[in-house]
Length: 357
Image (cartoon, rainbow, N blue to C red; front, side, top):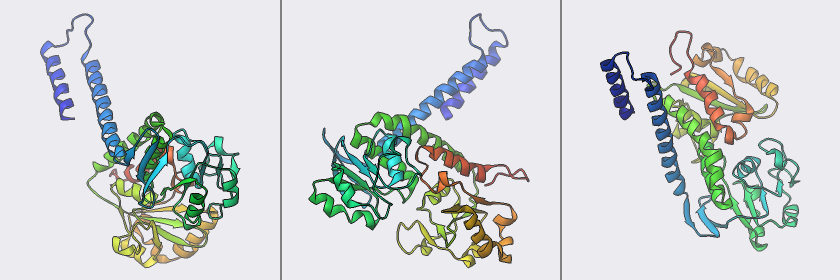
């Protein structure tokens, strides 16, 4: 940016010396400035992309013409054969990402969220926690992508016995980072690095632009990120999908390290007393299941308490229910929309003409 300022200053100085007269066919000052800015933006974009690419390359521990080695979702070194022909994906958010970089699957788990249109009618192996291993084996896959849950990792020995390659993918912890890293690893497995550049990098660059804008703000407001069903309420940590995004935007989570029992935990038990004590500037609520049922629980358990109305976030009308498609289900290629949604909440102008920060 310093280089850009010097160039622009030079253009303006030359303009002041020559006055208003310009040789025929010459480019006016405004056009010159626009051209310089456009060139600088392109160079800056290339620099950001090159920096990211160097970071992604570190994910790959070893690579040959036919195999790729990396660290899986459980922290173990894993070597897989490239370009599998019959893949089974046991988590739909992973399925969506697999298809984004050119993969295909012969089967999936139940549900419609995060399922690409092309995969809607492939074989259904049952619910996420009750996958039919018999039906899976009958499909004779050469690769299975599974989640970190025990209900899936228990199949590892059976898959080994049947000569089927498998890998555990963590898509929950720090999900925005996982989105990038998993997409890159998938593209290396599939040999579709070009699709990673085409489909993923533009999303990342837009997200990074929003994150950079947030860094310009000196204040760091606080936030409580509540996750609620009609039966219970929990609080997201900075390792959750939403928690990671709010942290990257410079907003401080009311959940502190001492509140986290298990390292990497994405949610902890809700405490109304701690919410009152922290008195956050913002309260974000993500919902699972019936939204009206969740709102009824929030009304009964929280809003009925007089202390709720005394909270800063409540008084400033900063309690926000977040859309499921961006904040409960993994946004993947729509991460830029998710960041923009939060930016609108945190950075929009307030009635007193002060920024949200």
